[in-house]
Image 1 (tube, rainbow, N blue to C red):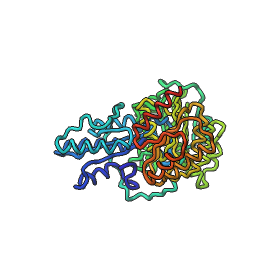
Image 2 (image 1 turned 120 degrees about the horizontal axis):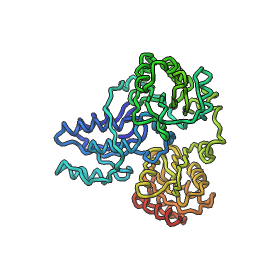
Image 3 (image 1 turned 90 degrees about the horizontal axis):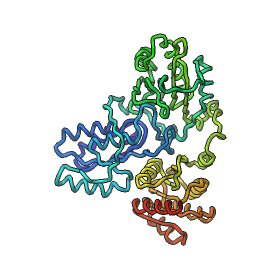
Length: 470
């Protein structure tokens, strides 16, 4: 199971079904950054293992360990909102619950076979699978509205985020009578307030922290204040938020004014994330010292929020990311000295690929999701974009053919060689629909390609080639 098992459901819903299903002998859980479904699942699994004489073995994977903060990863829209755990924290929570974690879906088959063999003789699972060890954080499962009340609209899925400049965010706030200041940020003197989404409760929420970290803005002392989107924000919550932020009574009026206006921007402008750093002015009133606002461009694609989209300044963005967007590709340049270009279909697999290569000692230059409906031309465009990064010394094509056909991907790779004059080594792994045909096309192409079935072998080869080119 992975993502929304069915629209509006979560991992716990699926786990309860699998627990009762006699034909289910083992469970595989595939998660990613965003939300708290994996943490809720970890708490359920702990209780399940306590009350069950012979629990079913569970393997898991969480993608996005290497995902840069604040970026929407791929067409599906994975991102970490304020108050949410990162991938490393989710991995540790599941591991502590007894889940055997791996770093790539290709390892599930052998891992589960071993687990089922062990479980037939013993309850121990020690030593089975490659465990990802990260930082620990768990949280109690909270009640949530049931899914049947929701209506799913696939046209509203997050495609790409628009983050406006702080000065533009300050202008939005200033128009609403909110005090702002460009005074240099001092984390020890400031607190954090944001509006985001509580994906477990299908509702907006206020996230507050009494301290602000220089890098992440929000500290570990954050607390989420969720409310029903239909009934609106309860003003009585302002006192609780002020108390958590350790603000004096003199600040209540201006804090309430700020919260009301942030919620109006969030709703009326279709934002997905509004972050602010706050301090008190000389009169004890709340003043915004920093702001990072993110908006959903799905609204713009539906001919809404033109005024917000007009704030976008592509001159401040990475040219390759803009070029990729025009071709329907999600490309994110990763920081550092990464030398491996990655070309993958699907955001989850793309995140897993970057994570797994990092675990093997490789350094990736980019994240690239071609999308589930990639064509040969899309693949060629992906090569062109990746090769514009001078850091790239080798390219790893990792495709699982579902909606995407492996022979079409193979044709795209050959087109790229023909039209782009590729001068770096390319490692190709094709699995799924039409994989035999795709592999045959690669093998008979006469091109200097390294083709593999096994992910581990492919990963080792691409890292070897990258290191040799340094």
